[in-house]
Length: 545
View 1 (cartoon, helix red, strand yellow):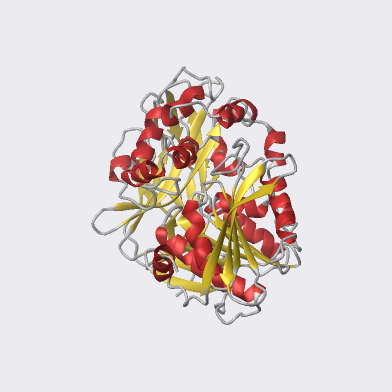
View 2 (cartoon, helix red, strand yellow):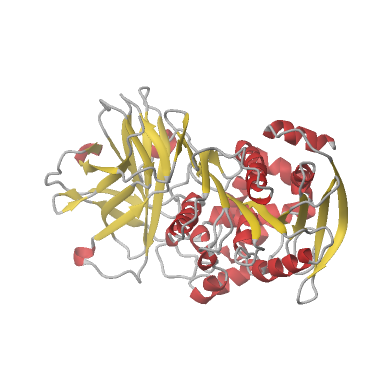
C-alpha cells in the first residue's frame, strides 16, 4: 500500500483493502489510426478473476493513479488511460471529438487481455464522465457506470443560454496545458485564485482569438478550430452529442453531482432519460461545487459500492432509496424514491415597483431600468461555475450594490418554503439593442441581511431573435436546479442583470464574430412588471417535513 492510497482511503472512509495492487505501466494501446495511448493497469494481487474499472483521463495519469490503486486494492482491475494528445499519449488534443472511436478501440483492447473476465465498470468525473457516455452503448453485458459532475453532450455546457462560458474555456485551457508544462506550478495557481484572475484578464482584451495565448503563452490548435468551426455549427455538435445513446440498454448508472456544479442540469437530464427508459439509477446531489474534495471522496466511496453491487452481486452496501439530496438552508440530507420527489406546488411571486417581490397581483407601474456597459461588464460572483476558488454560495452584497443590476426582495417569511427542482422566471424585458443578455439569480437573505445565492439562469438574445410587439421580449428562463429551504424570517431576493462575465462572455452589443469582436456598445434595459407584462418567479415548492 502506498502512502497516497492509504491517505485517500482514510479520507474517503473506504473499507479495509483486500490485497496489494500491482502496477503495470508503460502500456501502449493502439488506436485505429495508429496513435498510441498511454495506459496503466493496476491489478489486484489476489487469486481468482476480477472485474475491471476503466477510467479515460485528459489530465495525465498521475492525478488519478491513486484512485486506480485503491480500486485494485479492493478487488478490481483498474485501467487508467490518457486521452489522445494528453499526458504520455500520442496525437493532438482535440477535446470531445475522439472519445467515441478511441473509447471503442480501448474496449476492444481490454476484451483481448488475459486478465479480463467480461465484467466491466466505467468511472470518473467531468470529462471522464463524458468519455463514459461516448461508449455507453458498447459496454459488455455485465457492466456498470459511475458518472459524476458530467454530461452526455457539451454544447449546452460550453454555450449555456447561448453565450460561451469563457471562464470555463480559459480555465480548462490552463489546466490541461499546465499539467503538461508544470504540474506543481499549476497546483499553486489552482488554489491561489491565479487561474481565475488570468482568465478574467485575458477575457477583457479583444479580440478573443488570441485569448489562448494570453493564458497559456502559446496558441492552441483546438482553440481556433472551436472559434472557426464550433460556434453556430450544428453538425459539429451533433457528431459529439451522445445523449441518443442513453436508453433501455444503458448499464446501471450511479449519478453524483453538486447543486453548485455547472453541469447539474445536464446530469439531471441524463438521469431523467434513464428513468424514462425504465431504469432505476441512483442519484446523489450534495452542497458541492465542481471541484469539491468532499464530492470526490463521496464519488470514490459510492463507486466501489455500486461496482460491488453490479459486478460482484453484492448489494449489501446500497441504500434503500435511490435518490439522496442535500437540502441547503436545513443543512440536512434526505432520501427519496425519485427526483424530483413529487409534483411541486408552484408558488408565483411577482416583481413590483420599489424593489418589492411579493405574491400579490401586480398593478400598473413604469418599468425599472438600468444600463449595461460591456466596457465595465457586470461580473460573475460565485455560483455554479468552473473555478477552483470563489464558486458556490457567497455573500452577494458586492454584486447587488452595482448600478447595473436590479434587486427585488420579499418581506420576511412567516413560514419556511422548501424548493426542489428548477425555479423558473417569466421576464418581460426590452433592450435598446437587438443583442442583449439577461441574468437572473435567486438568493436567500437571512435575518442579518446577508444575501446568499441559491440558483440562477441566463439567456442571450441576438439580432436573429424573432421580432416581438413593441420590442418587448417575454423570456421564460430556467434557473439551475437546487434543493433549498428558505427559513422563517428569511427573505427571497431576485436579482436581474445583463451579464455575469466571464462565466458568460460579455455581450458586445454587436453582430461581430465572437473571436473577432472589438466594438463594445452599451445597452439600456427595461424590466416590466405591470398587469399586461407581469414579470414573476415560479418556485417548485415541496413538502418534505
